[in-house]
Image 1: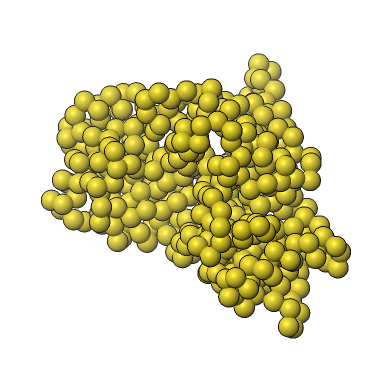
Image 2: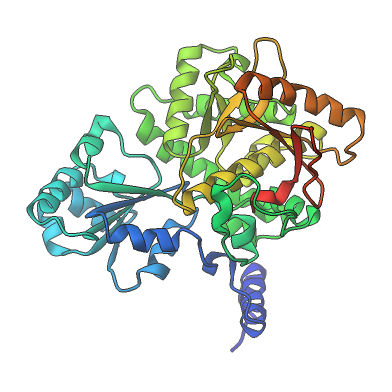
Length: 418
């Protein structure tokens, strides 16, 4: 075969595919996903199953690989979308069950018709629906499928998925191993690459930047506008996203108080971004005092909107993001979905995460006996007392767990939950 007229990037992709095939390393988008066992199990329980996640996180690829025998209809296709919008009943009649409908939220009229079919014949595994936005009550999809829809979330690729390691079901436990499977270097390298299969595959920083530019434009001008509704302004959306990036560059947790523009308007945009998984919102623990905190849906996305990621604050923010989504993904894939919160006392320093009333604080310094260690331990000890916890966790760039008798602060590696 002659490759003389192919673009340089295409030649790189072909050569990498050949190398991967020879040494049996799967391409990023072909890697096994830890959600697969739960997906197959849930299909035996629910007549309708929803798979949600950030755009291009790998939902379609997961279903094609896990359920190759089931037809998949994507509403990204104008032909299929037009047919579904014209007549939901006719559309479903032409595509009998079992059926995967990709990006189903684009045709809200399908939900009532799916409800009728499911109620007529309540058989597990009839419909698998994917969505890059959560189903909303305003289009009646939530009410239509109440009690009929099982929900699963696909998170960005975890470190273990990226390196094709096995899944640890011990995610249901806080401390499940003495050491991390991944080195500090592996963890650090994963931060700017993110967990979306395409940008993870692009090793050039310029290529990743181009990818995220295109991704952000499509998301802001199309997806976000659809969920926000009337009076939407994409320029305001971009202002908010870059403002979040600036706050993260300073190493702070993002809350509504950081914005000088009209708070009600900002909150509406943040809620819309949350609905399409661009942002993840953490509530302040009920024992603390503070406003909701917002994280980007992927470290690669956070890196793009921060622009400058070499500062100490920016690096801390990326580490926080990575740890958050490693914990959430592990809980989701083990069937132990839980809500995480963060903790802040009235005048104290925030503790990033609270899980099962165990406070978790992140640090980037590796010297355990340093003044930095004392600085990070102080708010953790305060949270332990306020939450009446037996211990707290300090996540640091160390290789093994450090636990001392009579010391409630346990130090664990960054990659502990990976």
